Image (cartoon, rainbow, N blue to C red; front, side, top):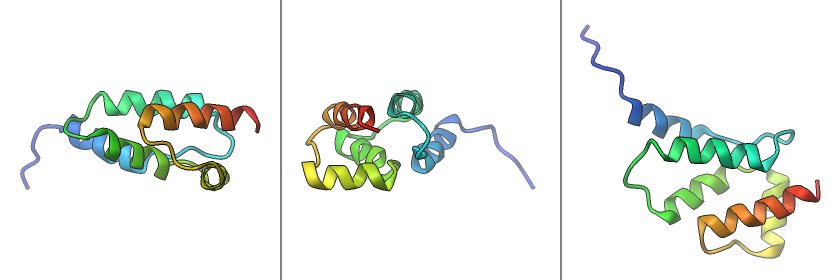
Amino acid sequence: MKIGPYNTISDAEHQLCHLSMTDTKHVNKYVVEFHHITCQVHGYGDGALQQLFYQGLPDHIKAEISYIGKPSTLSDMQTLMQLIDVHY
């Protein structure tokens, strides 16, 4: 069995798809982790990154978004998450 070199981009994509914010984690920590990983991947547009960011959010924050409405950009989504997180 031949093992190739470690693929950092593939690993980062895997981390990005499985990153989630637990109920006890503050959104700022989630945002920092998300940005750290997205700096290592290429070819993801704002819409795809926004969807991945949203998927990793806990259900209580997704519920708040359903009342407020989903922002149109990743930056606006992160700002909204910080406002929601302040209330918890």
